Image (cartoon, rainbow, N blue to C red):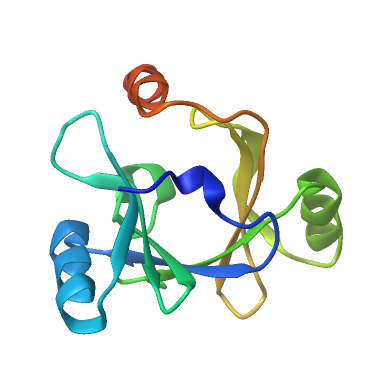
Length: 149
């Protein structure tokens, strides 16, 4: 697997929320020739909390649903539109001022990003992130254990 830290600092990446992320990854590999870039398992070892695949030079992120944290299940929108950038605070605050609803507050996260989620007036979920520190897979696993307690 390639290192996920090579993702662009700008651009838009779809982030699909699915009921079986491992099966979706396998399908994308077989059907579209996807290359798996990253896979981070939840501490329970059963669900994927974040994965990324590359299809035709485009990155698609995906994860299993975590309704206990997001309040949504697949009955809501199963897609998150992700923006990676450098000045995430300014962007987030501008969106809130324009009427976006804070779904997940902008905070420093255990995987090294400053990250938050917004719901636009049409109901779509947007996530924004800025990489603050690059962590190893082992550091992310340990930090996830602490975060999921």
